[in-house]
Length: 281
Image (cartoon, rainbow, N blue to C red; front, side, top):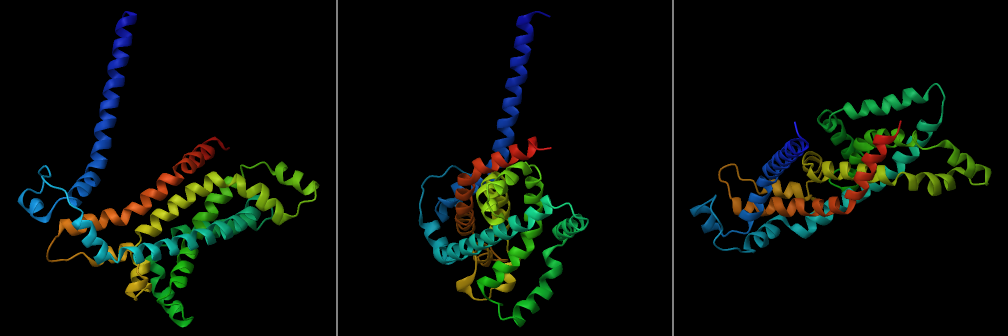
C-alpha cells in the first residue's frame, strides 16, 4: 500500500471519528437545546406544532416561570446553603484529611475506612432519625439544619478526595516549612491549602451538582416556602394531570442556569484536578 493510500485511510478514519463525536455530542445536547428553544416559544405556537420551527420568540414564559418559582429568593436560598456547605466541607475535610494522609499510626487506616464507609450510606436510610434529631435540637425548618445535614453527608467523600491528593504531595515541603519555624496552622494554610486548589475545584463541582439538584433534603426539612430551594419550587410546578411545557421548560432552564455558570468558572480547576490525579502514584 502506498503512502498516499495510508494517509487517505488515516484521514477517512479521523473524519469518521469526528463525525461520530459530533453526532453523539448533538444527541446529548438535543434535549437541552429543545427545552431552551421551547422556552422561548409562545404557548399557542407550541400547542399547534410542538416539534416545529419557532415562528415567534417571547420572554413571557421565563417571566411567568420566575414569578411562580419565586426565583430570586429561591436562588438566594440555594446559593446560601451551597456556599456555606462548601466552606465547611473544605475546612473540616482538609483538616481531617491531613493527619489521615500523614500519620502512620496503626489506627489511621481504620479511621479512614470508617469515613469511606460513610460514602455508601444512602440519605434515605437516615431521613427519619435526622428529622427527629433536627426537631429535637430546634433546627427543623432552618437553613442551618440543612447545611449541617449536607456537610455531614458529603464529608466522607470530601475526606476521600483530600486524603488521596495529600498523599501525593511531598512531605519534604512541610518539613522544610517546619525547619523555618512555621507551625502546623501556618504550614497548612500557606503550603498545603494552595496545593489543594485543583482537587478543591473538582470537589466543589461534585458537591454543587448534588446539592443544587437535590430534592429530598430541602423538601423534607424546609417547610417554609420562603426557605425552599430552586429545585423544590420547580417540583411544585409539576402537575400530575396536565403538562405545561411553556412553564416546565423555562423553570428547568432557570433552575440549571446558575449551575452552568459555576461550572464555567471552575472548569479549569476541574481539568487540573483530573490531570493531577492521573499523574500521581
